[in-house]
Length: 178
Image (cartoon, rainbow, N blue to C red):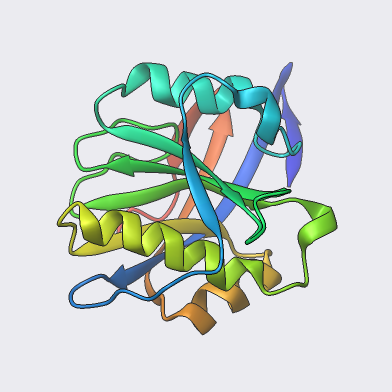
């Protein structure tokens, strides 16, 4: 929700933070994945702008990685994930208690409804598990019912909720006790 506060837009957010236990969990995925180094233009899907992803990676060159996921025949890019590791300072959250945090995740509109969300999450879990991570978290807007359904189906459990207001790019936490 957006309101105007003086001349500054005022954004209200209600995110649900989900957690996935990575211990002893690996599963084969039908998707191929490639780490992205410089070719961000290939995964521009709108909501997550490439400048935003590049900014996170520039701020955390040692603690963040971006991957693109390709169909089994490697002919189409179906989605992407930006993963931040413990110690990273990304845009909305500081990674403290989780080994890894999915900062951004997306599936191209044309590839939605084909079961790729579960495959993409398997790939991300495998990447984190192979690095010795034990816990993976992500945050999702409380209105994004489709994503919430996909995360819960995969095995993510609700960890906590976070409500905040953003004014001029600065976040103010509303519910401190959660």
